[in-house]
Image 1: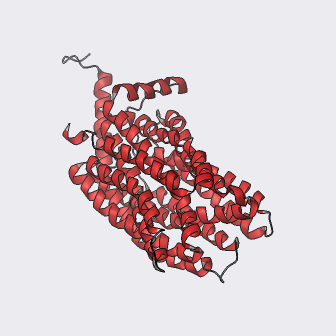
Image 2 (image 1 turned 180 degrees about the vertical axis):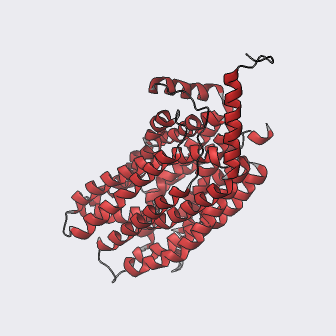
Image 3 (image 1 turned 30 degrees about the vertical axis):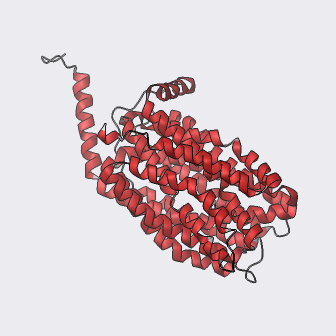
Length: 442
Protein backbone atom coordinates (compact mmCIF):
# COMPACT_ATOMS: atom_id res chain seq x y z
CA UNK A 1 0.00 0.00 0.00
CA UNK A 2 1.19 3.55 -0.65
CA UNK A 3 1.08 6.30 1.92
CA UNK A 4 -2.30 7.39 0.57
CA UNK A 5 -3.68 3.89 1.16
CA UNK A 6 -3.95 3.03 -2.55
CA UNK A 7 -2.45 -0.28 -3.69
CA UNK A 8 0.18 -0.32 -6.47
CA UNK A 9 -2.15 -2.56 -8.50
CA UNK A 10 -4.89 0.08 -8.38
CA UNK A 11 -2.41 2.77 -9.42
CA UNK A 12 -1.21 0.63 -12.34
CA UNK A 13 -4.77 -0.08 -13.49
CA UNK A 14 -5.57 3.64 -13.24
CA UNK A 15 -2.56 4.47 -15.38
CA UNK A 16 -3.55 1.86 -17.95
CA UNK A 17 -7.11 3.19 -18.07
CA UNK A 18 -5.77 6.71 -18.57
CA UNK A 19 -3.55 5.43 -21.40
CA UNK A 20 -6.54 3.60 -22.92
CA UNK A 21 -8.66 6.77 -22.82
CA UNK A 22 -5.83 8.68 -24.48
CA UNK A 23 -5.55 6.11 -27.27
CA UNK A 24 -9.31 6.14 -27.85
CA UNK A 25 -9.25 9.94 -28.20
CA UNK A 26 -6.18 9.78 -30.41
CA UNK A 27 -7.83 7.42 -32.91
CA UNK A 28 -11.40 8.64 -32.46
CA UNK A 29 -11.58 10.47 -35.80
CA UNK A 30 -10.06 7.53 -37.68
CA UNK A 31 -12.42 4.98 -36.11
CA UNK A 32 -15.38 7.28 -36.69
CA UNK A 33 -14.59 7.53 -40.41
CA UNK A 34 -13.92 3.78 -40.76
CA UNK A 35 -17.24 3.00 -39.06
CA UNK A 36 -19.11 5.43 -41.31
CA UNK A 37 -17.59 3.94 -44.49
CA UNK A 38 -18.28 0.41 -43.24
CA UNK A 39 -21.99 1.12 -42.81
CA UNK A 40 -22.24 3.01 -46.10
CA UNK A 41 -20.98 -0.08 -47.95
CA UNK A 42 -23.27 -2.35 -45.90
CA UNK A 43 -26.19 -0.17 -46.95
CA UNK A 44 -25.32 -0.74 -50.60
CA UNK A 45 -25.31 -4.50 -50.06
CA UNK A 46 -28.51 -4.40 -48.01
CA UNK A 47 -30.69 -2.83 -50.70
CA UNK A 48 -30.36 -5.96 -52.83
CA UNK A 49 -31.75 -8.18 -50.03
CA UNK A 50 -34.24 -5.96 -48.21
CA UNK A 51 -36.54 -7.86 -45.83
CA UNK A 52 -39.50 -5.70 -46.80
CA UNK A 53 -39.21 -6.00 -50.61
CA UNK A 54 -36.67 -8.38 -52.16
CA UNK A 55 -36.81 -11.34 -49.78
CA UNK A 56 -40.65 -11.50 -49.62
CA UNK A 57 -40.75 -11.21 -53.40
CA UNK A 58 -38.35 -14.12 -53.85
CA UNK A 59 -39.88 -16.36 -51.17
CA UNK A 60 -43.40 -15.51 -52.34
CA UNK A 61 -42.57 -16.58 -55.90
CA UNK A 62 -41.20 -19.93 -54.70
CA UNK A 63 -44.11 -20.46 -52.29
CA UNK A 64 -46.70 -19.88 -55.01
CA UNK A 65 -45.01 -22.63 -57.05
CA UNK A 66 -44.24 -25.12 -54.26
CA UNK A 67 -47.19 -24.66 -51.86
CA UNK A 68 -49.65 -21.96 -53.03
CA UNK A 69 -52.16 -22.61 -50.24
CA UNK A 70 -49.55 -21.91 -47.55
CA UNK A 71 -47.90 -18.75 -48.89
CA UNK A 72 -48.71 -16.74 -45.75
CA UNK A 73 -47.24 -19.39 -43.47
CA UNK A 74 -44.09 -19.70 -45.60
CA UNK A 75 -43.64 -15.92 -45.56
CA UNK A 76 -43.91 -16.01 -41.77
CA UNK A 77 -40.61 -17.91 -41.66
CA UNK A 78 -38.77 -14.78 -42.84
CA UNK A 79 -39.28 -12.80 -39.60
CA UNK A 80 -38.99 -15.99 -37.50
CA UNK A 81 -35.49 -16.62 -38.84
CA UNK A 82 -34.42 -12.98 -38.68
CA UNK A 83 -35.74 -12.41 -35.13
CA UNK A 84 -34.25 -15.67 -33.83
CA UNK A 85 -30.97 -14.87 -35.51
CA UNK A 86 -30.85 -11.45 -33.93
CA UNK A 87 -31.75 -12.71 -30.46
CA UNK A 88 -30.50 -16.26 -29.86
CA UNK A 89 -26.76 -15.59 -30.44
CA UNK A 90 -26.71 -12.37 -28.46
CA UNK A 91 -26.22 -13.63 -24.91
CA UNK A 92 -23.94 -16.48 -25.98
CA UNK A 93 -21.71 -14.16 -27.99
CA UNK A 94 -21.65 -11.53 -25.27
CA UNK A 95 -20.67 -14.14 -22.68
CA UNK A 96 -17.88 -15.47 -24.92
CA UNK A 97 -16.33 -12.06 -25.64
CA UNK A 98 -17.04 -10.16 -22.42
CA UNK A 99 -13.59 -10.88 -20.97
CA UNK A 100 -11.66 -9.94 -24.14
CA UNK A 101 -9.50 -6.84 -24.23
CA UNK A 102 -10.26 -6.29 -27.92
CA UNK A 103 -13.51 -6.98 -29.79
CA UNK A 104 -12.80 -5.81 -33.35
CA UNK A 105 -11.48 -9.22 -34.52
CA UNK A 106 -14.57 -11.19 -33.42
CA UNK A 107 -16.65 -8.44 -35.03
CA UNK A 108 -14.79 -8.90 -38.33
CA UNK A 109 -15.29 -12.67 -38.14
CA UNK A 110 -19.05 -12.20 -37.72
CA UNK A 111 -19.14 -9.90 -40.78
CA UNK A 112 -17.29 -12.55 -42.82
CA UNK A 113 -19.80 -15.18 -41.72
CA UNK A 114 -22.83 -13.11 -42.74
CA UNK A 115 -21.23 -12.38 -46.13
CA UNK A 116 -20.63 -15.98 -47.24
CA UNK A 117 -24.29 -17.21 -47.43
CA UNK A 118 -25.08 -14.71 -50.20
CA UNK A 119 -22.16 -15.92 -52.32
CA UNK A 120 -23.24 -19.51 -51.77
CA UNK A 121 -26.86 -18.90 -52.73
CA UNK A 122 -25.82 -16.82 -55.74
CA UNK A 123 -23.93 -19.88 -57.02
CA UNK A 124 -26.87 -22.19 -56.28
CA UNK A 125 -29.26 -20.05 -58.35
CA UNK A 126 -26.80 -19.43 -61.16
CA UNK A 127 -25.24 -22.87 -61.59
CA UNK A 128 -28.20 -25.13 -60.88
CA UNK A 129 -31.12 -24.10 -63.10
CA UNK A 130 -34.22 -26.23 -62.97
CA UNK A 131 -34.01 -26.99 -59.24
CA UNK A 132 -37.43 -27.68 -57.74
CA UNK A 133 -38.99 -24.73 -55.93
CA UNK A 134 -39.41 -26.61 -52.65
CA UNK A 135 -35.72 -27.58 -52.58
CA UNK A 136 -34.75 -23.98 -53.35
CA UNK A 137 -36.87 -22.80 -50.44
CA UNK A 138 -35.14 -25.20 -48.06
CA UNK A 139 -31.65 -24.22 -49.24
CA UNK A 140 -32.53 -20.53 -49.10
CA UNK A 141 -33.89 -20.66 -45.56
CA UNK A 142 -30.79 -22.58 -44.44
CA UNK A 143 -28.52 -19.89 -45.93
CA UNK A 144 -30.77 -17.15 -44.57
CA UNK A 145 -30.55 -18.63 -41.05
CA UNK A 146 -26.74 -18.62 -41.17
CA UNK A 147 -26.79 -15.01 -42.34
CA UNK A 148 -29.01 -13.86 -39.47
CA UNK A 149 -27.12 -15.83 -36.82
CA UNK A 150 -23.91 -14.11 -37.93
CA UNK A 151 -25.67 -10.77 -38.33
CA UNK A 152 -27.11 -11.03 -34.82
CA UNK A 153 -23.63 -11.69 -33.45
CA UNK A 154 -22.22 -8.74 -35.41
CA UNK A 155 -24.83 -6.37 -33.96
CA UNK A 156 -23.82 -7.22 -30.41
CA UNK A 157 -20.14 -7.00 -31.26
CA UNK A 158 -20.45 -3.68 -33.05
CA UNK A 159 -22.41 -2.28 -30.11
CA UNK A 160 -19.49 -3.25 -27.87
CA UNK A 161 -16.88 -1.84 -30.28
CA UNK A 162 -18.87 1.38 -30.68
CA UNK A 163 -19.31 1.74 -26.92
CA UNK A 164 -15.55 1.50 -26.55
CA UNK A 165 -14.28 3.58 -29.50
CA UNK A 166 -16.99 6.17 -30.20
CA UNK A 167 -17.83 8.89 -27.65
CA UNK A 168 -21.52 9.01 -26.56
CA UNK A 169 -22.01 12.48 -28.02
CA UNK A 170 -20.71 11.26 -31.42
CA UNK A 171 -22.77 8.07 -31.76
CA UNK A 172 -25.77 9.87 -33.18
CA UNK A 173 -23.53 11.58 -35.74
CA UNK A 174 -22.00 8.22 -36.68
CA UNK A 175 -25.46 6.88 -37.34
CA UNK A 176 -26.54 10.05 -39.16
CA UNK A 177 -23.54 10.19 -41.51
CA UNK A 178 -23.40 6.46 -42.29
CA UNK A 179 -27.11 6.01 -42.92
CA UNK A 180 -27.70 9.30 -44.72
CA UNK A 181 -24.77 9.02 -47.12
CA UNK A 182 -25.29 5.27 -47.53
CA UNK A 183 -28.98 5.60 -48.29
CA UNK A 184 -28.61 8.49 -50.73
CA UNK A 185 -25.99 6.50 -52.64
CA UNK A 186 -28.10 3.34 -52.43
CA UNK A 187 -31.28 5.01 -53.73
CA UNK A 188 -30.00 5.70 -57.27
CA UNK A 189 -28.11 2.39 -57.20
CA UNK A 190 -31.46 0.69 -56.72
CA UNK A 191 -32.50 1.96 -60.17
CA UNK A 192 -30.04 -0.57 -61.53
CA UNK A 193 -32.35 -3.19 -60.07
CA UNK A 194 -34.89 -2.44 -62.80
CA UNK A 195 -32.45 -3.80 -65.39
CA UNK A 196 -32.97 -7.34 -64.16
CA UNK A 197 -36.18 -7.24 -62.08
CA UNK A 198 -38.70 -5.80 -64.54
CA UNK A 199 -40.80 -8.20 -66.59
CA UNK A 200 -39.18 -9.14 -69.88
CA UNK A 201 -35.62 -8.78 -68.56
CA UNK A 202 -34.01 -11.68 -66.65
CA UNK A 203 -36.16 -14.71 -65.88
CA UNK A 204 -36.85 -15.95 -62.34
CA UNK A 205 -34.76 -17.00 -60.43
CA UNK A 206 -31.75 -15.63 -62.38
CA UNK A 207 -32.87 -12.07 -61.59
CA UNK A 208 -32.58 -12.82 -57.88
CA UNK A 209 -29.20 -14.49 -58.38
CA UNK A 210 -27.91 -11.11 -59.56
CA UNK A 211 -29.33 -9.27 -56.54
CA UNK A 212 -27.87 -11.75 -54.05
CA UNK A 213 -24.53 -11.69 -55.87
CA UNK A 214 -24.39 -7.90 -55.49
CA UNK A 215 -25.12 -8.24 -51.76
CA UNK A 216 -22.20 -10.68 -51.49
CA UNK A 217 -19.81 -8.26 -53.23
CA UNK A 218 -20.72 -5.24 -51.09
CA UNK A 219 -20.70 -7.18 -47.83
CA UNK A 220 -17.23 -8.44 -48.73
CA UNK A 221 -16.08 -4.86 -49.31
CA UNK A 222 -17.47 -3.71 -45.96
CA UNK A 223 -15.42 -6.43 -44.29
CA UNK A 224 -12.26 -5.10 -45.92
CA UNK A 225 -12.94 -1.63 -44.53
CA UNK A 226 -12.81 -2.95 -40.95
CA UNK A 227 -9.09 -3.76 -41.23
CA UNK A 228 -8.48 -0.02 -40.78
CA UNK A 229 -10.08 0.08 -37.30
CA UNK A 230 -7.67 0.94 -34.48
CA UNK A 231 -8.79 -0.60 -31.20
CA UNK A 232 -6.57 -0.24 -28.12
CA UNK A 233 -6.69 -3.03 -25.54
CA UNK A 234 -9.07 -2.33 -22.66
CA UNK A 235 -6.99 -2.79 -19.49
CA UNK A 236 -9.79 -3.83 -17.15
CA UNK A 237 -12.11 -6.31 -18.89
CA UNK A 238 -14.71 -8.29 -17.01
CA UNK A 239 -13.78 -11.72 -15.72
CA UNK A 240 -14.88 -14.63 -17.84
CA UNK A 241 -17.85 -16.39 -16.29
CA UNK A 242 -19.98 -19.42 -17.14
CA UNK A 243 -23.00 -19.00 -19.37
CA UNK A 244 -25.27 -19.81 -16.44
CA UNK A 245 -23.74 -17.06 -14.32
CA UNK A 246 -23.92 -14.67 -17.28
CA UNK A 247 -27.63 -15.39 -17.74
CA UNK A 248 -28.16 -14.86 -14.00
CA UNK A 249 -26.53 -11.43 -14.27
CA UNK A 250 -28.74 -10.64 -17.25
CA UNK A 251 -31.88 -11.41 -15.27
CA UNK A 252 -30.53 -9.29 -12.44
CA UNK A 253 -30.23 -6.32 -14.81
CA UNK A 254 -33.87 -6.77 -15.81
CA UNK A 255 -34.92 -6.89 -12.16
CA UNK A 256 -32.82 -4.00 -10.87
CA UNK A 257 -32.64 -1.53 -13.75
CA UNK A 258 -36.17 -0.21 -14.13
CA UNK A 259 -35.34 2.07 -17.06
CA UNK A 260 -33.66 -0.75 -18.97
CA UNK A 261 -36.61 -3.04 -18.27
CA UNK A 262 -39.04 -0.52 -19.73
CA UNK A 263 -36.79 -0.02 -22.75
CA UNK A 264 -36.69 -3.77 -23.41
CA UNK A 265 -40.44 -4.27 -23.02
CA UNK A 266 -41.27 -1.26 -25.18
CA UNK A 267 -38.84 -2.49 -27.82
CA UNK A 268 -40.33 -5.98 -27.83
CA UNK A 269 -43.84 -4.58 -28.29
CA UNK A 270 -43.02 -2.13 -31.07
CA UNK A 271 -40.85 -4.68 -32.90
CA UNK A 272 -43.98 -6.79 -33.48
CA UNK A 273 -44.61 -4.54 -36.49
CA UNK A 274 -41.45 -5.98 -38.08
CA UNK A 275 -43.26 -9.31 -38.35
CA UNK A 276 -45.52 -7.73 -40.98
CA UNK A 277 -42.64 -6.82 -43.31
CA UNK A 278 -43.06 -9.87 -45.59
CA UNK A 279 -46.77 -9.15 -45.99
CA UNK A 280 -46.65 -5.60 -47.35
CA UNK A 281 -45.53 -6.94 -50.74
CA UNK A 282 -48.15 -9.73 -50.62
CA UNK A 283 -50.83 -7.16 -49.69
CA UNK A 284 -49.88 -4.99 -52.67
CA UNK A 285 -49.79 -7.97 -55.03
CA UNK A 286 -53.19 -9.26 -53.91
CA UNK A 287 -55.03 -5.91 -53.88
CA UNK A 288 -53.13 -3.71 -56.34
CA UNK A 289 -51.63 -6.24 -58.73
CA UNK A 290 -48.12 -4.82 -58.51
CA UNK A 291 -45.26 -6.73 -60.14
CA UNK A 292 -41.51 -6.87 -59.53
CA UNK A 293 -40.98 -3.83 -61.75
CA UNK A 294 -42.19 -1.71 -58.80
CA UNK A 295 -39.63 -3.19 -56.41
CA UNK A 296 -36.89 -0.75 -57.38
CA UNK A 297 -39.16 2.22 -56.59
CA UNK A 298 -40.12 0.77 -53.21
CA UNK A 299 -36.43 0.27 -52.36
CA UNK A 300 -35.60 3.83 -53.50
CA UNK A 301 -38.40 5.29 -51.37
CA UNK A 302 -37.25 3.25 -48.39
CA UNK A 303 -33.65 4.43 -48.73
CA UNK A 304 -34.46 8.09 -49.27
CA UNK A 305 -36.61 8.04 -46.13
CA UNK A 306 -33.95 6.16 -44.21
CA UNK A 307 -31.23 8.61 -45.22
CA UNK A 308 -33.23 11.74 -44.41
CA UNK A 309 -34.60 10.39 -41.15
CA UNK A 310 -31.23 9.04 -39.99
CA UNK A 311 -29.67 12.48 -40.27
CA UNK A 312 -32.51 14.14 -38.36
CA UNK A 313 -32.71 11.48 -35.63
CA UNK A 314 -28.96 11.10 -35.28
CA UNK A 315 -28.38 14.82 -34.81
CA UNK A 316 -31.36 15.04 -32.45
CA UNK A 317 -29.93 12.19 -30.35
CA UNK A 318 -26.56 13.92 -30.02
CA UNK A 319 -28.20 17.16 -28.87
CA UNK A 320 -31.08 15.93 -26.71
CA UNK A 321 -30.43 12.25 -26.00
CA UNK A 322 -31.95 9.11 -27.48
CA UNK A 323 -35.37 9.14 -25.80
CA UNK A 324 -37.01 11.75 -28.02
CA UNK A 325 -36.07 10.04 -31.30
CA UNK A 326 -37.22 6.72 -29.85
CA UNK A 327 -40.63 8.15 -29.00
CA UNK A 328 -41.10 9.50 -32.52
CA UNK A 329 -39.93 6.31 -34.22
CA UNK A 330 -42.02 4.02 -31.99
CA UNK A 331 -45.13 6.03 -32.80
CA UNK A 332 -44.48 5.79 -36.53
CA UNK A 333 -44.01 2.01 -36.26
CA UNK A 334 -47.60 1.69 -35.06
CA UNK A 335 -48.89 3.76 -37.98
CA UNK A 336 -47.50 1.62 -40.84
CA UNK A 337 -50.08 -1.24 -40.76
CA UNK A 338 -52.94 1.26 -40.68
CA UNK A 339 -51.53 3.24 -43.60
CA UNK A 340 -51.04 0.08 -45.69
CA UNK A 341 -54.67 -0.96 -45.18
CA UNK A 342 -55.87 2.51 -46.13
CA UNK A 343 -53.79 2.79 -49.31
CA UNK A 344 -54.75 -0.55 -50.85
CA UNK A 345 -58.40 0.54 -50.76
CA UNK A 346 -57.81 3.84 -52.54
CA UNK A 347 -59.76 4.13 -55.81
CA UNK A 348 -58.05 4.89 -59.11
CA UNK A 349 -55.00 3.76 -61.03
CA UNK A 350 -52.59 5.75 -58.87
CA UNK A 351 -52.94 3.45 -55.85
CA UNK A 352 -49.79 1.38 -56.62
CA UNK A 353 -47.71 4.57 -56.61
CA UNK A 354 -49.46 5.88 -53.48
CA UNK A 355 -48.50 2.60 -51.80
CA UNK A 356 -44.89 3.80 -51.97
CA UNK A 357 -45.75 5.83 -48.84
CA UNK A 358 -45.75 2.58 -46.87
CA UNK A 359 -42.10 2.00 -47.77
CA UNK A 360 -41.23 5.62 -47.04
CA UNK A 361 -42.31 5.09 -43.43
CA UNK A 362 -40.74 1.62 -43.28
CA UNK A 363 -37.54 3.41 -44.25
CA UNK A 364 -37.42 5.33 -40.98
CA UNK A 365 -37.60 2.22 -38.77
CA UNK A 366 -33.93 1.09 -38.97
CA UNK A 367 -33.07 4.12 -36.85
CA UNK A 368 -35.11 2.62 -34.00
CA UNK A 369 -32.71 -0.27 -33.41
CA UNK A 370 -29.64 1.98 -33.33
CA UNK A 371 -31.27 4.55 -31.03
CA UNK A 372 -32.38 1.78 -28.68
CA UNK A 373 -28.85 0.37 -28.56
CA UNK A 374 -27.30 3.79 -27.96
CA UNK A 375 -29.80 4.40 -25.16
CA UNK A 376 -28.78 1.11 -23.51
CA UNK A 377 -25.08 1.96 -23.85
CA UNK A 378 -25.63 5.15 -21.85
CA UNK A 379 -27.26 3.18 -19.05
CA UNK A 380 -24.24 0.91 -18.50
CA UNK A 381 -20.54 1.29 -17.59
CA UNK A 382 -18.14 0.26 -20.36
CA UNK A 383 -17.33 -3.17 -18.91
CA UNK A 384 -21.07 -4.04 -18.90
CA UNK A 385 -21.78 -2.92 -22.47
CA UNK A 386 -21.75 -6.52 -23.86
CA UNK A 387 -24.35 -7.79 -21.41
CA UNK A 388 -26.62 -4.75 -21.78
CA UNK A 389 -26.57 -4.83 -25.60
CA UNK A 390 -27.08 -8.60 -25.69
CA UNK A 391 -29.89 -8.52 -23.13
CA UNK A 392 -31.68 -5.80 -25.07
CA UNK A 393 -31.40 -7.54 -28.44
CA UNK A 394 -32.37 -10.92 -27.00
CA UNK A 395 -35.84 -9.61 -26.09
CA UNK A 396 -36.72 -9.72 -29.79
CA UNK A 397 -37.20 -13.46 -29.43
CA UNK A 398 -40.44 -12.73 -27.58
CA UNK A 399 -42.13 -11.76 -30.83
CA UNK A 400 -41.01 -14.86 -32.74
CA UNK A 401 -43.89 -17.04 -31.52
CA UNK A 402 -46.36 -14.60 -33.07
CA UNK A 403 -44.97 -14.84 -36.60
CA UNK A 404 -46.45 -18.22 -37.61
CA UNK A 405 -49.73 -17.19 -35.98
CA UNK A 406 -49.73 -14.04 -38.09
CA UNK A 407 -49.07 -16.05 -41.25
CA UNK A 408 -51.83 -18.56 -40.51
CA UNK A 409 -54.25 -15.78 -39.53
CA UNK A 410 -53.64 -13.89 -42.79
CA UNK A 411 -54.22 -17.09 -44.78
CA UNK A 412 -57.44 -17.73 -42.83
CA UNK A 413 -58.91 -14.26 -42.16
CA UNK A 414 -57.14 -11.88 -44.58
CA UNK A 415 -55.05 -8.86 -43.72
CA UNK A 416 -57.32 -6.37 -41.98
CA UNK A 417 -57.88 -7.93 -38.51
CA UNK A 418 -54.24 -9.03 -38.24
CA UNK A 419 -52.84 -5.62 -39.21
CA UNK A 420 -55.17 -3.86 -36.75
CA UNK A 421 -54.12 -6.11 -33.84
CA UNK A 422 -50.41 -5.64 -34.60
CA UNK A 423 -50.87 -1.86 -34.80
CA UNK A 424 -52.55 -1.94 -31.37
CA UNK A 425 -49.68 -3.92 -29.80
CA UNK A 426 -47.13 -1.52 -31.27
CA UNK A 427 -49.11 1.47 -29.97
CA UNK A 428 -48.82 0.10 -26.40
CA UNK A 429 -45.05 -0.11 -26.88
CA UNK A 430 -44.95 3.46 -28.18
CA UNK A 431 -46.82 4.73 -25.11
CA UNK A 432 -44.40 2.87 -22.84
CA UNK A 433 -41.45 4.51 -24.62
CA UNK A 434 -42.71 7.92 -23.50
CA UNK A 435 -42.29 6.82 -19.86
CA UNK A 436 -38.51 6.26 -20.21
CA UNK A 437 -36.10 8.55 -18.39
CA UNK A 438 -33.39 10.17 -20.51
CA UNK A 439 -30.04 8.93 -19.07
CA UNK A 440 -28.27 12.22 -19.76
CA UNK A 441 -30.80 14.09 -17.63
CA UNK A 442 -31.07 11.63 -14.73
